[in-house]
Length: 590
Image (cartoon, rainbow, N blue to C red; front, side, top):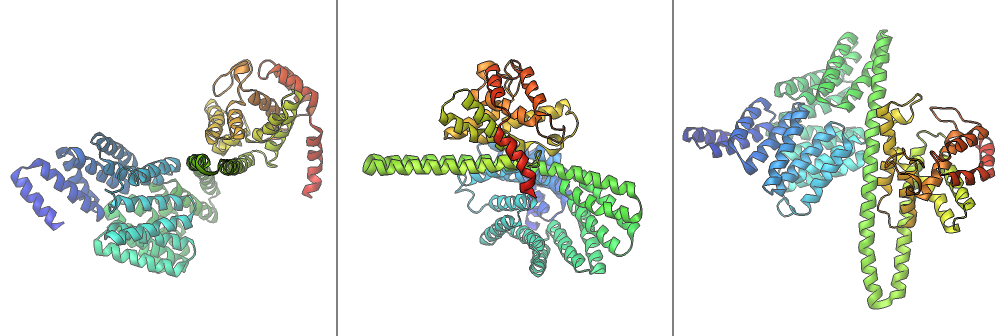
């Protein structure tokens, strides 16, 4: 700091703007590490006016970190996007990796987990590819590890988060980066506390506090104090906890750290309640809620609502208690739906990896077949292909059942649709192999529902136009999950998932196909799906009598459905074995 300030004074006197801008960038970054946000912002903004190329990209990246730390998330996002453009224009892969990692960190704070995973994965792929040698000991490596740990921690996977934080600490100790080390120890302490390892967590918080005080990293220092205060709160050390949270809050306020203030206020409110100061506790927590909404932290807002609603109930204000409980439910559903989409992306990525590995292994085995023992190697190819198909089928089938349980409490809809689709195919005279293929593939028709929010999927009333457009996306999501499969089974499942809501006369979704342009398998499943949906209760409707459901199939023949398929279905529906299963279900349950 002293050297940079002295250099800046000389450069200002000399009027060397470009070099002055570079020193201001370095000075702003150092101030940012120390949590001196106002001074850092002044230097970084001046540097932005004086620099070009790599230095400008680094300046924008540092400004984004400052905006993130002070709760200005939109400004942070804009700065990171501008920095990425700069680095791409000059071909700086290292700079792009840093920005992608920081974008992932920011998106975690916003609760946008699928996008966070996408950016962190892109950063990781670049860091082990084109930028591998350049990033061997670069701080961005540690930052990516910390961000991946935070993502898993927010997604309620503390053990996986712990692994990433430990890797980040090992990296920091190897390269001598005290900032990464302090943050890694702090994050490890949070995981240890969540896992119930209180004594280990206390030692880690104290270590993080010592590292932060030594390096004057005020933001980490405030966070470590909050962690220690939480341990005091759990140990019913009310007075000590109150003093610690107040100290952390004051430190966060001095540095402009809105997120630090938020958590200090949240836990201070809990302590005040324990000290029988309920009006003070309510006022403190309402202030914390305002901050949570201001900085866009949905999980923190949930924590505040979860603390406030029983407090208002105890105070006798039941209207406020109910309001906070309703807001808690709505916010938690939104977070859950974001997590579901992230799981869909992870599953899709898992399939892509499996396919790439499978293709590489097939190539190797075919070379062996050509050179050594073709018959043995080809048998191994077939076995590996069968194993891959079985693994993929098991994954998507489990996912399909998980999706179905959200709006079918028995979870048997997918099984029934598979049985009926196979029976209709047999009635149409399709080959036995196709009938059996359809029996399994039809079960995956609604796998895309895993990506539809509960507020839409389980809505009792009529969907709005926007909600219906979102519901239609389950065909696209399902097709995306199943896309690219090498087996005939997954290829048929993909076309069914995509096209089972197309209409024979047109006007369906997602592609507005007509007539025989709709795959035959999807046309068959469409009839089986609607018949089963009509004859079973759902959140938005009661079950129809079987004769009424059959009349509805006749009415929709030629408009929604292929008339030939409806005619075949009317010959066999309802299936006797399905009626027997339905009749026997209550006894089996008892």
